Amino acid sequence: MKRSGFLKRKTPMSRGKGFSVKRKALPKQSKVSVAKIQRDLWVECRRIVRSRYKDCYTCPAKDLVGSNAHTGHGPWAKAAIGAYLKYDLRCLRLQCYACNVHRSGMSYEFGKNLLKEIGPEAMAQLEADRQVSVKAVDHYASLLEQYRRL
Image 1 (tube, rainbow, N blue to C red):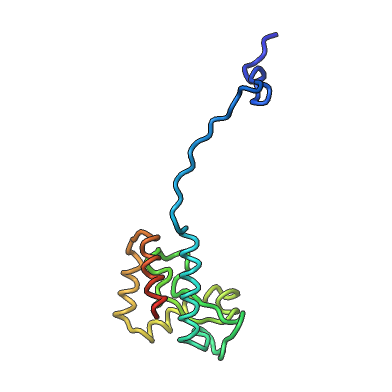
Image 2: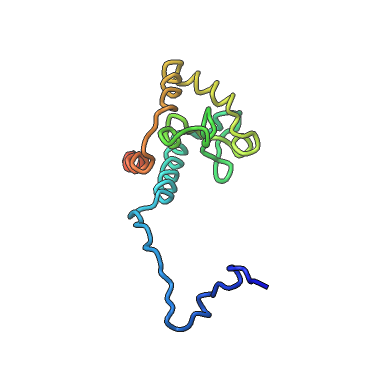
């Protein structure tokens, strides 16, 4: 009976002492990871939004504090916008926990209120900016520096 090649293969341990495993060189890491920049940028966005607004943007809840105060994206979901608008202060407002989590950000109310606040021209500019494509790391780093100065 002929054995298959799979069964004849030797494992590295059975090859003896002289066997060494070749390892690939690890890819170079950047000095600061994208995730760290995003975390720091989100901390700055939250700080700025919470200093500017005190009430929920989509419902009548007043004086939001602590875990009830969320920084919400609108009028689009965070996953639906590109890197250019993800941390843009024009799209971030304070929302209560119920609106942001349980009611999925109430995007219709958010958009309606934002249209009243900034006007149709600025809303059209936001929609145009939604299509802008940028290199995320560079854009986030410049935004982080800009927001730290505010």
